[in-house]
Length: 394
Ligand code: 3PG
Image (spheres, protein in one colour):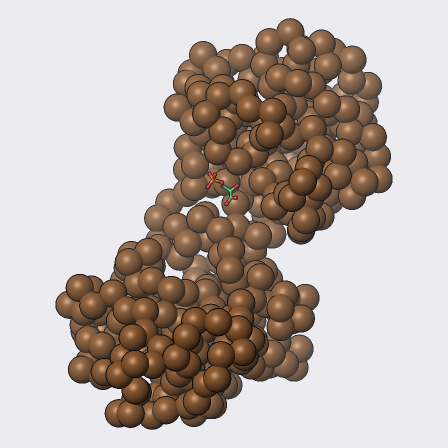
Protein backbone atom coordinates (compact mmCIF):
# COMPACT_ATOMS: atom_id res chain seq x y z
CA UNK A 1 0.00 0.00 0.00
CA UNK A 2 0.86 3.61 -0.14
CA UNK A 3 1.06 5.34 3.23
CA UNK A 4 1.55 8.88 4.53
CA UNK A 5 5.25 8.38 3.77
CA UNK A 6 4.41 8.41 0.07
CA UNK A 7 2.61 11.74 -0.22
CA UNK A 8 3.32 15.39 0.52
CA UNK A 9 0.10 16.49 2.20
CA UNK A 10 1.05 20.15 2.57
CA UNK A 11 -1.77 22.35 1.29
CA UNK A 12 -3.76 19.30 0.20
CA UNK A 13 -7.36 18.61 1.15
CA UNK A 14 -7.11 15.20 2.82
CA UNK A 15 -10.34 13.23 3.14
CA UNK A 16 -9.50 11.09 6.16
CA UNK A 17 -11.87 8.17 6.87
CA UNK A 18 -11.78 7.40 10.57
CA UNK A 19 -13.92 5.25 12.88
CA UNK A 20 -15.63 7.58 15.34
CA UNK A 21 -18.23 4.97 16.27
CA UNK A 22 -17.54 5.29 19.99
CA UNK A 23 -19.80 4.32 22.90
CA UNK A 24 -21.83 7.29 24.17
CA UNK A 25 -24.16 7.83 27.08
CA UNK A 26 -26.24 10.98 27.53
CA UNK A 27 -24.27 12.82 24.86
CA UNK A 28 -20.88 11.96 26.38
CA UNK A 29 -18.22 9.65 24.99
CA UNK A 30 -17.72 6.84 27.54
CA UNK A 31 -14.68 5.19 25.92
CA UNK A 32 -12.28 7.31 23.88
CA UNK A 33 -10.01 4.46 22.75
CA UNK A 34 -10.93 4.81 19.08
CA UNK A 35 -10.37 8.57 19.24
CA UNK A 36 -6.95 8.05 20.79
CA UNK A 37 -6.05 5.54 18.08
CA UNK A 38 -6.76 7.92 15.16
CA UNK A 39 -5.24 10.95 16.87
CA UNK A 40 -1.66 10.33 15.62
CA UNK A 41 -2.76 10.25 11.98
CA UNK A 42 -4.81 13.43 12.37
CA UNK A 43 -1.96 15.20 14.15
CA UNK A 44 0.61 14.09 11.59
CA UNK A 45 -1.40 15.36 8.61
CA UNK A 46 -2.24 18.60 10.40
CA UNK A 47 1.38 19.17 11.50
CA UNK A 48 2.54 18.59 7.94
CA UNK A 49 0.19 21.32 6.73
CA UNK A 50 -2.54 19.15 5.25
CA UNK A 51 -6.18 20.17 5.55
CA UNK A 52 -7.78 17.36 7.53
CA UNK A 53 -11.36 16.58 6.53
CA UNK A 54 -12.75 13.79 8.69
CA UNK A 55 -15.32 11.39 7.31
CA UNK A 56 -17.03 8.90 9.61
CA UNK A 57 -20.28 7.15 10.41
CA UNK A 58 -21.98 6.98 13.76
CA UNK A 59 -24.54 4.35 14.80
CA UNK A 60 -26.92 2.89 12.27
CA UNK A 61 -29.36 5.73 11.52
CA UNK A 62 -32.05 5.45 8.87
CA UNK A 63 -31.59 8.91 7.38
CA UNK A 64 -30.81 12.10 9.33
CA UNK A 65 -31.33 11.65 13.06
CA UNK A 66 -30.10 14.19 15.63
CA UNK A 67 -29.26 11.50 18.17
CA UNK A 68 -26.63 10.13 15.80
CA UNK A 69 -24.91 13.44 15.11
CA UNK A 70 -21.11 13.38 15.18
CA UNK A 71 -21.00 16.86 16.72
CA UNK A 72 -20.40 15.74 20.33
CA UNK A 73 -17.83 13.22 19.10
CA UNK A 74 -15.98 15.95 17.18
CA UNK A 75 -15.85 17.97 20.41
CA UNK A 76 -14.42 14.99 22.31
CA UNK A 77 -11.92 14.40 19.52
CA UNK A 78 -10.77 18.01 19.72
CA UNK A 79 -9.81 17.40 23.37
CA UNK A 80 -7.88 14.27 22.43
CA UNK A 81 -5.89 15.87 19.58
CA UNK A 82 -5.58 19.13 21.53
CA UNK A 83 -6.46 21.19 18.46
CA UNK A 84 -9.69 22.84 17.31
CA UNK A 85 -11.95 20.59 15.24
CA UNK A 86 -14.49 22.48 13.13
CA UNK A 87 -17.80 20.84 12.28
CA UNK A 88 -20.04 20.91 9.20
CA UNK A 89 -23.58 19.66 9.59
CA UNK A 90 -23.61 17.73 6.36
CA UNK A 91 -20.94 15.63 4.65
CA UNK A 92 -21.85 16.81 1.12
CA UNK A 93 -23.40 19.85 -0.56
CA UNK A 94 -23.16 23.50 0.41
CA UNK A 95 -22.41 23.16 4.17
CA UNK A 96 -19.53 20.77 3.51
CA UNK A 97 -18.13 22.75 0.55
CA UNK A 98 -18.18 26.01 2.51
CA UNK A 99 -16.50 24.51 5.55
CA UNK A 100 -13.79 22.92 3.39
CA UNK A 101 -13.19 26.18 1.53
CA UNK A 102 -12.65 27.94 4.87
CA UNK A 103 -9.84 25.57 5.92
CA UNK A 104 -6.28 26.80 6.21
CA UNK A 105 -3.25 24.50 6.06
CA UNK A 106 -3.18 22.28 9.17
CA UNK A 107 -6.84 22.90 10.08
CA UNK A 108 -9.15 20.05 11.05
CA UNK A 109 -12.79 19.70 10.05
CA UNK A 110 -15.23 16.92 10.90
CA UNK A 111 -18.14 16.32 8.54
CA UNK A 112 -21.52 15.10 9.80
CA UNK A 113 -22.36 11.38 9.91
CA UNK A 114 -21.98 9.87 6.43
CA UNK A 115 -24.87 7.47 7.18
CA UNK A 116 -27.33 10.39 7.23
CA UNK A 117 -27.35 9.68 3.48
CA UNK A 118 -28.58 6.23 2.51
CA UNK A 119 -26.28 6.39 -0.52
CA UNK A 120 -23.30 5.90 1.83
CA UNK A 121 -24.12 2.27 2.58
CA UNK A 122 -25.09 1.67 -1.05
CA UNK A 123 -21.68 2.91 -2.17
CA UNK A 124 -23.61 5.02 -4.67
CA UNK A 125 -21.30 6.42 -7.38
CA UNK A 126 -23.00 9.84 -7.45
CA UNK A 127 -22.57 10.14 -3.67
CA UNK A 128 -18.94 9.02 -3.92
CA UNK A 129 -18.42 11.75 -6.54
CA UNK A 130 -19.98 14.36 -4.21
CA UNK A 131 -17.61 13.35 -1.40
CA UNK A 132 -14.62 13.21 -3.76
CA UNK A 133 -15.18 16.86 -4.77
CA UNK A 134 -14.19 17.86 -1.23
CA UNK A 135 -10.70 16.33 -1.28
CA UNK A 136 -7.49 15.89 -3.24
CA UNK A 137 -6.56 12.53 -1.67
CA UNK A 138 -8.27 9.86 0.46
CA UNK A 139 -6.59 8.36 3.50
CA UNK A 140 -8.25 5.44 5.27
CA UNK A 141 -7.53 4.99 8.95
CA UNK A 142 -10.67 3.01 9.73
CA UNK A 143 -9.66 -0.65 9.77
CA UNK A 144 -12.60 -1.31 12.09
CA UNK A 145 -15.04 -0.21 9.38
CA UNK A 146 -13.08 -1.82 6.51
CA UNK A 147 -15.45 -4.78 6.30
CA UNK A 148 -18.05 -2.37 4.93
CA UNK A 149 -17.98 -1.61 1.20
CA UNK A 150 -19.47 1.83 1.70
CA UNK A 151 -18.86 5.10 -0.16
CA UNK A 152 -16.52 6.57 2.45
CA UNK A 153 -14.81 3.28 3.41
CA UNK A 154 -14.27 1.85 -0.08
CA UNK A 155 -15.82 3.85 -2.93
CA UNK A 156 -13.56 6.87 -2.49
CA UNK A 157 -10.51 4.66 -2.88
CA UNK A 158 -11.38 4.19 -6.54
CA UNK A 159 -11.99 7.87 -7.14
CA UNK A 160 -9.04 9.59 -5.41
CA UNK A 161 -5.39 8.70 -4.79
CA UNK A 162 -5.67 6.34 -1.78
CA UNK A 163 -3.36 5.91 1.23
CA UNK A 164 -3.37 3.93 4.47
CA UNK A 165 -3.28 5.99 7.66
CA UNK A 166 -1.11 5.08 10.64
CA UNK A 167 -3.79 3.16 12.55
CA UNK A 168 -4.67 1.17 9.45
CA UNK A 169 -0.96 0.37 9.04
CA UNK A 170 -0.62 -0.69 12.68
CA UNK A 171 -3.71 -2.92 12.52
CA UNK A 172 -2.54 -4.62 9.34
CA UNK A 173 0.98 -5.12 10.68
CA UNK A 174 -0.37 -6.73 13.84
CA UNK A 175 -2.78 -8.95 11.97
CA UNK A 176 -0.05 -10.07 9.60
CA UNK A 177 2.04 -11.07 12.63
CA UNK A 178 -0.93 -13.00 14.06
CA UNK A 179 -2.06 -15.11 11.14
CA UNK A 180 -0.35 -13.94 7.95
CA UNK A 181 3.25 -14.95 8.66
CA UNK A 182 3.28 -15.62 12.41
CA UNK A 183 6.05 -16.94 14.60
CA UNK A 184 4.98 -20.53 15.32
CA UNK A 185 3.49 -22.26 17.22
CA UNK A 186 0.30 -20.20 17.06
CA UNK A 187 -2.52 -20.58 19.53
CA UNK A 188 -5.98 -19.06 19.21
CA UNK A 189 -8.31 -18.55 22.13
CA UNK A 190 -11.90 -18.24 21.00
CA UNK A 191 -14.71 -17.67 23.43
CA UNK A 192 -18.07 -15.98 23.53
CA UNK A 193 -21.61 -17.16 23.90
CA UNK A 194 -22.50 -18.75 20.60
CA UNK A 195 -20.98 -21.07 18.06
CA UNK A 196 -23.49 -19.88 15.47
CA UNK A 197 -21.80 -16.49 15.14
CA UNK A 198 -18.32 -17.99 14.82
CA UNK A 199 -18.61 -21.06 12.59
CA UNK A 200 -16.71 -19.52 9.66
CA UNK A 201 -14.09 -18.21 12.02
CA UNK A 202 -13.49 -21.60 13.65
CA UNK A 203 -13.40 -23.37 10.29
CA UNK A 204 -10.75 -20.96 9.04
CA UNK A 205 -8.69 -20.97 12.23
CA UNK A 206 -8.29 -24.74 12.50
CA UNK A 207 -6.43 -24.67 9.19
CA UNK A 208 -4.12 -21.86 10.35
CA UNK A 209 -3.22 -22.38 14.01
CA UNK A 210 -1.48 -25.14 15.94
CA UNK A 211 -3.83 -25.09 18.91
CA UNK A 212 -7.31 -23.72 19.41
CA UNK A 213 -8.75 -23.12 22.87
CA UNK A 214 -12.54 -23.01 22.83
CA UNK A 215 -14.21 -21.43 25.83
CA UNK A 216 -17.31 -19.50 26.82
CA UNK A 217 -20.85 -20.64 26.08
CA UNK A 218 -19.70 -21.98 22.73
CA UNK A 219 -17.57 -24.64 24.45
CA UNK A 220 -20.80 -26.11 25.87
CA UNK A 221 -22.00 -26.89 22.36
CA UNK A 222 -18.76 -28.80 21.69
CA UNK A 223 -18.99 -30.64 25.02
CA UNK A 224 -22.62 -31.57 24.33
CA UNK A 225 -21.61 -32.83 20.87
CA UNK A 226 -19.13 -35.15 22.59
CA UNK A 227 -21.82 -36.55 24.85
CA UNK A 228 -21.09 -34.48 27.97
CA UNK A 229 -24.21 -33.57 29.96
CA UNK A 230 -24.20 -29.76 30.22
CA UNK A 231 -27.31 -29.36 32.40
CA UNK A 232 -29.08 -26.07 31.85
CA UNK A 233 -26.05 -24.37 30.32
CA UNK A 234 -26.34 -22.23 27.24
CA UNK A 235 -25.65 -24.59 24.33
CA UNK A 236 -26.76 -24.63 20.71
CA UNK A 237 -27.57 -28.32 20.64
CA UNK A 238 -28.71 -28.28 17.01
CA UNK A 239 -25.15 -27.29 16.10
CA UNK A 240 -23.65 -30.50 17.49
CA UNK A 241 -22.94 -31.83 13.96
CA UNK A 242 -21.21 -28.56 13.08
CA UNK A 243 -19.07 -28.81 16.20
CA UNK A 244 -18.07 -32.37 15.31
CA UNK A 245 -17.25 -31.33 11.74
CA UNK A 246 -14.99 -28.55 13.04
CA UNK A 247 -13.24 -31.04 15.31
CA UNK A 248 -12.66 -33.43 12.43
CA UNK A 249 -11.32 -30.64 10.27
CA UNK A 250 -8.98 -29.64 13.10
CA UNK A 251 -7.68 -33.17 13.43
CA UNK A 252 -7.03 -33.41 9.72
CA UNK A 253 -5.15 -30.10 9.84
CA UNK A 254 -3.12 -31.08 12.91
CA UNK A 255 -4.69 -28.40 15.05
CA UNK A 256 -5.15 -29.40 18.70
CA UNK A 257 -8.58 -28.44 20.03
CA UNK A 258 -8.44 -27.58 23.71
CA UNK A 259 -11.84 -27.79 25.37
CA UNK A 260 -12.62 -27.31 29.07
CA UNK A 261 -11.95 -30.34 31.29
CA UNK A 262 -13.96 -28.96 34.18
CA UNK A 263 -16.47 -26.18 34.72
CA UNK A 264 -17.62 -23.60 37.22
CA UNK A 265 -21.33 -24.16 37.69
CA UNK A 266 -24.02 -22.02 39.33
CA UNK A 267 -27.77 -22.41 39.61
CA UNK A 268 -28.78 -18.98 38.45
CA UNK A 269 -27.32 -16.45 36.07
CA UNK A 270 -26.31 -13.65 38.43
CA UNK A 271 -23.19 -12.03 39.85
CA UNK A 272 -21.95 -13.79 42.98
CA UNK A 273 -24.40 -16.68 42.54
CA UNK A 274 -23.08 -19.57 44.67
CA UNK A 275 -20.93 -21.76 42.42
CA UNK A 276 -18.83 -24.88 42.44
CA UNK A 277 -16.30 -26.55 40.13
CA UNK A 278 -17.28 -29.91 38.64
CA UNK A 279 -15.59 -32.44 36.42
CA UNK A 280 -17.25 -32.98 33.07
CA UNK A 281 -18.81 -36.26 34.17
CA UNK A 282 -20.59 -34.57 37.07
CA UNK A 283 -22.22 -31.38 35.80
CA UNK A 284 -25.51 -31.15 37.73
CA UNK A 285 -28.63 -31.46 35.57
CA UNK A 286 -30.08 -28.23 36.99
CA UNK A 287 -26.76 -26.33 36.91
CA UNK A 288 -25.39 -23.80 34.44
CA UNK A 289 -21.76 -23.60 33.31
CA UNK A 290 -20.73 -19.97 33.74
CA UNK A 291 -16.97 -20.27 33.50
CA UNK A 292 -14.18 -22.76 32.87
CA UNK A 293 -12.96 -24.57 35.99
CA UNK A 294 -9.51 -24.45 37.68
CA UNK A 295 -8.08 -27.45 35.82
CA UNK A 296 -9.12 -25.94 32.51
CA UNK A 297 -7.46 -22.67 33.46
CA UNK A 298 -4.23 -24.56 34.17
CA UNK A 299 -4.48 -26.21 30.75
CA UNK A 300 -4.98 -22.88 29.02
CA UNK A 301 -1.93 -21.47 30.83
CA UNK A 302 0.13 -24.47 29.70
CA UNK A 303 -1.11 -24.07 26.13
CA UNK A 304 -0.14 -20.39 26.19
CA UNK A 305 3.31 -21.40 27.47
CA UNK A 306 3.74 -23.66 24.43
CA UNK A 307 2.88 -20.89 21.97
CA UNK A 308 4.93 -18.11 20.38
CA UNK A 309 1.93 -16.23 19.01
CA UNK A 310 -1.54 -15.83 20.50
CA UNK A 311 -4.64 -14.50 18.82
CA UNK A 312 -7.61 -13.99 21.11
CA UNK A 313 -11.25 -13.29 20.53
CA UNK A 314 -14.03 -13.70 23.07
CA UNK A 315 -14.20 -14.34 26.82
CA UNK A 316 -13.92 -17.82 28.38
CA UNK A 317 -16.88 -17.35 30.71
CA UNK A 318 -19.57 -14.89 31.79
CA UNK A 319 -16.81 -12.37 32.50
CA UNK A 320 -19.20 -9.47 33.10
CA UNK A 321 -20.28 -11.12 36.38
CA UNK A 322 -17.88 -11.91 39.20
CA UNK A 323 -16.63 -14.50 40.02
CA UNK A 324 -17.31 -15.90 36.54
CA UNK A 325 -14.60 -13.67 35.06
CA UNK A 326 -11.93 -15.84 36.70
CA UNK A 327 -11.00 -17.97 33.68
CA UNK A 328 -10.85 -15.02 31.30
CA UNK A 329 -8.94 -12.76 33.69
CA UNK A 330 -6.48 -15.47 34.68
CA UNK A 331 -5.70 -16.44 31.07
CA UNK A 332 -5.43 -12.77 30.07
CA UNK A 333 -3.00 -12.05 32.91
CA UNK A 334 -0.94 -15.08 32.02
CA UNK A 335 -0.75 -14.04 28.36
CA UNK A 336 0.21 -10.53 29.45
CA UNK A 337 3.04 -11.89 31.65
CA UNK A 338 4.39 -14.04 28.80
CA UNK A 339 4.21 -11.03 26.50
CA UNK A 340 6.09 -8.83 28.96
CA UNK A 341 8.72 -11.57 29.27
CA UNK A 342 9.07 -11.42 25.45
CA UNK A 343 8.03 -15.04 25.09
CA UNK A 344 4.74 -14.33 23.32
CA UNK A 345 3.29 -12.08 20.64
CA UNK A 346 -0.30 -11.48 21.75
CA UNK A 347 -3.00 -10.00 19.57
CA UNK A 348 -6.59 -9.54 20.65
CA UNK A 349 -9.69 -8.02 19.12
CA UNK A 350 -13.45 -8.00 18.96
CA UNK A 351 -15.91 -6.02 21.11
CA UNK A 352 -16.17 -8.09 24.32
CA UNK A 353 -12.52 -9.09 24.17
CA UNK A 354 -11.25 -5.57 24.66
CA UNK A 355 -13.69 -5.06 27.55
CA UNK A 356 -12.48 -8.31 29.13
CA UNK A 357 -8.80 -7.34 28.81
CA UNK A 358 -9.54 -3.94 30.28
CA UNK A 359 -11.29 -5.65 33.18
CA UNK A 360 -8.16 -7.74 33.75
CA UNK A 361 -6.09 -4.50 33.49
CA UNK A 362 -3.83 -6.08 30.91
CA UNK A 363 -4.90 -4.51 27.59
CA UNK A 364 -1.76 -2.35 27.69
CA UNK A 365 0.48 -5.40 28.10
CA UNK A 366 -0.72 -7.22 25.00
CA UNK A 367 1.38 -6.78 21.86
CA UNK A 368 -1.63 -5.36 20.05
CA UNK A 369 -5.29 -4.86 20.85
CA UNK A 370 -7.46 -4.13 17.87
CA UNK A 371 -10.35 -1.71 18.30
CA UNK A 372 -12.23 -3.54 15.57
CA UNK A 373 -15.29 -5.65 16.28
CA UNK A 374 -16.93 -7.02 13.14
CA UNK A 375 -13.90 -6.27 10.95
CA UNK A 376 -11.62 -8.28 13.28
CA UNK A 377 -13.99 -11.26 13.08
CA UNK A 378 -14.27 -11.11 9.29
CA UNK A 379 -10.50 -10.89 9.05
CA UNK A 380 -10.20 -13.97 11.30
CA UNK A 381 -12.66 -15.72 9.02
CA UNK A 382 -10.15 -15.17 6.23
CA UNK A 383 -12.49 -12.89 4.28
CA UNK A 384 -11.06 -10.05 2.21
CA UNK A 385 -12.06 -6.69 3.68
CA UNK A 386 -13.20 -4.28 0.95
CA UNK A 387 -11.76 -1.23 2.71
CA UNK A 388 -8.34 -2.94 2.84
CA UNK A 389 -8.46 -4.46 -0.64
CA UNK A 390 -9.05 -1.05 -2.22
CA UNK A 391 -5.81 0.17 -0.66
CA UNK A 392 -3.91 -2.87 -1.88
CA UNK A 393 -4.67 -2.26 -5.53
CA UNK A 394 -3.45 1.34 -5.44
C1 3PG B 1 -17.85 -0.84 14.47
O1 3PG B 1 -18.29 -0.15 15.40
O2 3PG B 1 -17.51 -2.04 14.61
C2 3PG B 1 -17.63 -0.20 13.14
O3 3PG B 1 -17.65 1.17 13.26
C3 3PG B 1 -18.64 -0.69 12.13
O4 3PG B 1 -19.93 -0.31 12.49
P1 3PG B 1 -21.17 -1.03 11.80
O5 3PG B 1 -21.19 -2.44 12.30
O6 3PG B 1 -22.40 -0.24 12.21
O7 3PG B 1 -20.96 -0.99 10.31
